[in-house]
Image 1 (tube, chains in turn brown, purple):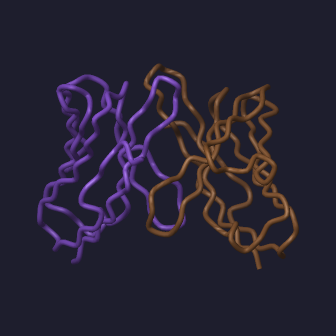
Image 2 (cartoon, each protein chain N blue to C red):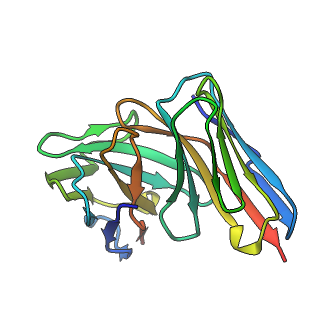
Length: 116
Length: 110
């Protein structure tokens, strides 16, 4: 399957700081990437759809000014958590939409964010 | 509104037992994907089913897509401790978005 990387894998930051998470498709071009949030032992919750060269589309209830998404190239999307607070602590996962017509998504390994 | 109901959500069985996980929806999907996720890692795609009535096998795992493309099942034969993990079904929309089920946490005891 296609490979997606995320960086960093873990980050600990102080409340009020901003954190950037990178998502890269390594062996395919992803015009569309997705960002998810996952709570312990729960399913994935879609936050936003990231489209290369255009603005991201956010799901209902997700603050676009809080979670800034940039998709500057066909292989890179970034999620910036601005002015992070402890309630933003979570496991963030990105995925890239592969071509082929089956709408298969390939996921990164996730980023564990802890806000103190 | 949860559009894809996955059950059971928790399952603890002994090694060697069989199990089935179900995903049901009132919506039709263009395809349905099954993922397995281990703690601290991202989901890994196991299989994609596309055609109504399709059956796919992956070693001891059997995946079935309903005739109407609204439901799917995952059957594991002779479960092993290595099968332990979170299993996720996800229905694909034509937009590319995935609708995820609630997930099934499977524990296989030796």
